[in-house]
Image (cartoon, rainbow, N blue to C red; front, side, top):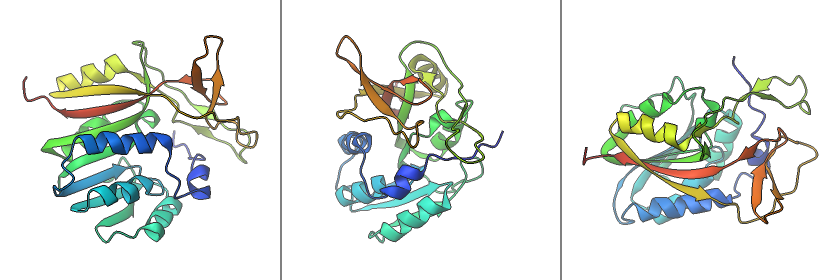
Length: 237
């Protein structure tokens, strides 16, 4: 099923807004790289390019490439780009490929749209031997995987869409171990409260439960755990 993506509205409305998860992701990336080093960076599903625009300020010797399936988002990314070492291209996850290798690759909010983990093999093939892949998204701390389709009936001619599925942390670790890679997970906790969006109920919002913990959920009534994952080749095994 080829689902259309109605979830680009927030990026088009505020194309230069740096989300809290992207701020933390930048910190995680900079912990792994010498800011004076040179290399190549790839952002898979770059949206409006805010990650590249901000990260490039800290890594002036890197060349940056971002791609996204949405032409509207790539147009915004290209328009807002001030770095001559950055380029943004329209590309589909399934068909795009690169001959060159990247030292750093990022895929934020992307993996949950796929029914299997196989895209990770392609992303890892784009890495240099000592490269690092950073993934952000929904993962389950329990060893249960879910595949979820939703239909946002507030959209005209609504169709079934993906993007809410999640793999368990254990599933991803096992998958990567077989490929010779190690992974490190860090839980992301949203530092702000988000109200429900009555105009687009599928959007993420927060709720406090009796214990005082703040949970992240959406209009599909699905509670989501979010993690940063740092992936690199396991040279010890």
